[in-house]
Image 1 (cartoon, rainbow, N blue to C red):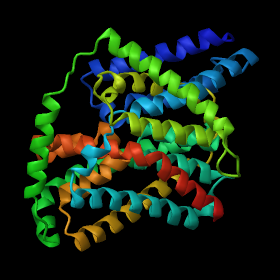
Image 2 (image 1 turned 30 degrees about the vertical axis):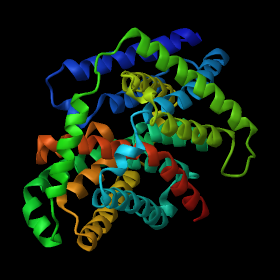
Image 3 (image 1 turned 90 degrees about the vertical axis):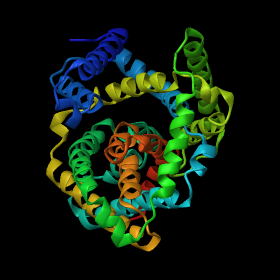
Image 4 (image 1 turned 180 degrees about the vertical axis):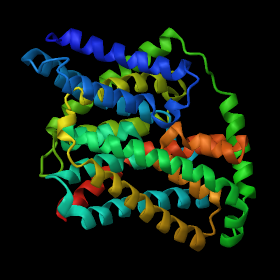
Length: 386
């Protein structure tokens, strides 16, 4: 049984590294349906349930200090890849597709919460806000919303369950739809020539960027991200507090703003930000899971059902938008998965249409990082009023 703070952190990071290595090296399809980060959450949760570590004062202090200070740094690094100038170049139709998907997901959460509110546990709106952050952006946004709203770690068990089961089935459904692209595009009367042109331009630009990560890159990005975290926390404490906007919320907002600003500077061209932000993300997810307990997941079925209802509302509204704005199936599918799946899965769906379109999938997924935290907080604000 672990009782020391350093041993607790060392074990969690080492365990996360084993899972990441297994995902990279194994030839099994298991990790296609259960990503390493989801497996990390549930395995750490299981170890917590079995009493692998005690919640001693030392462990509690280390947990809070590391999690609170890493979160703004992770958000900053995550957003360094999100250049607003490149996103604008996607053109109006793809931006309409993306934000139609975003808005339909938000409406799905609000309507589903209103329908099933009587079946949920107290303060479930906070967990839904965190999941909305994930389904608009990614796991990093979910963690950011969780930190901003002080969502109990145990509540995230439901969100990760929905994020795993509902998401996996949604990915398979969207891949199945690829074969219906011609019929769908004919129904919406869409023009796909511009998409092919943009995809080729983005792919050429990506090939010209430096890919080798050097020691100087990592130390600069690490130092800058930690400094941004310190500044964000300091400024967040100076901001006025309200029922919704508290110090932790302001900290997340400030780190997000700085990440978007620096993404338009030469700092964004330094390779390694993705790798560093992923290390921080896995560390934070492991920390959150280490405080949860399977005994607290007593209403899993209703949450999984809720996830499918959210997706059904999202699909219906996105289809209506496609008909109104004459969007093609590629734009709708990738926009949906860019929100719900993020960088890990949107390029896969894009490649199912054409390898030349992969950069569009990546760029649309990065857009989710920008709006995911704000979207999750907005959903949370609306749900708190229901």
